[in-house]
Length: 591
Image (spheres, rainbow, N blue to C red):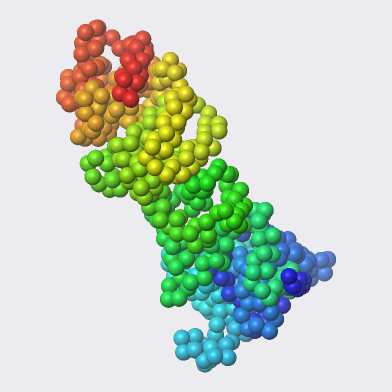
């Protein structure tokens, strides 16, 4: 491996005629407030006054960039360092625009044509400037999107609207830097004096910052003439997760190996589809979580930080058939199943006999449980790819067992899931590797037996149900869980698998104002009602509420009315506890 490492400043990198391309396999721009703050402070604290009120600049090392190509090439590829160079481009672009606005046309144009764009020998009609020269952006993003170019690589901001997560991060970074470069903010940091600042002060500080960035920010440029060697260095610099995540490294490897870009960049199209599919269902779930979930469902249990090493090890294993192309294809194919797990919708399962699949998946969402996802993904994939191996009734049975287990284990008893995520990976891989119906039945039976062994006892369940399930107006986190419980009990009492309407309102039998605070939110003091009946009940006594309760069509309300009318109307803590225990028993019977 031959490479050259040279210490340089930003002027030496960007003022030359060479251009730089950020390849499609590079991670997208990802800096947020933390990284921007640190970078800004590192620049500012290296500018200071001496006793003669002259500015002093201290050199500051900002890291390493890795470039693929030789010095004679017109275009070099940025293998590592695009985040810093992108932010520096934004900074210089905004400085140029502010100086132009302040009447400093000469230096503004010099910054623009030296650091933001370069003059091309080719005559491109689409890139002609007002002076007839052909301009090409100094740093090009090979992502197929123009947001960075339109926002920061022209003399004016074209006010493009962000179209993806990277665009939004770029927009935030631009706004962050714009605020820092405003007159009062910048001058107070550099001039270190109180009072008002005039236009001359602002120009002085902008030019000082420009000089600091171009002459005193130092980096080490590593140039490698062979692309593969450049990526080897890139991995050595980043594989420990200091600068790049496992997902960034995996994406880099995929795009490095999936080389078909004409007429369509297939890898980019599939990767973007995966990202958009997940974003369309959930703003909180990341593609990293999906890739790890998929890996756990197919191979073995690993932590997020081990994901890239496991991926690379599998790729290099002579006994493995996994390739980068195949890996991306499987992720692309399975993401439609994954989104049905993380954010279930009834439309995902439109047939009447599929309703129980949706109900089970939705229940796990209500419980806020994510650790079974690899196992569920493996089951859904098996049902899709080998439907004769896993019948729909068996799939539903498996999902219901997961639902019932986590209702008791997680939602009500709140047991610690220590080791359970690793166990789910084992279950998922077993399902994935099962070649026939008989083998799959054996594996799912083993899984169900494990659930049974780990399920909390009825005594613990009842105790937790009575003492830990609670809902009042100031503590609503368990509202969805309580509605889930009432729906299950209602279906049990009616002898049906499906309600014809949704339970949408929770009534406090003993009002929150007048009843014991410790018991007012307990299950025994709650009734499901429609909004209109609940509104009419207000904070009345139980005696006045009973006629309103009788308007409800819910069996659970009718059961309560029978119970209360067979005793006196005095609603006490003891009756609340007794009803909580009775509801716990009904819930057990319904499962």
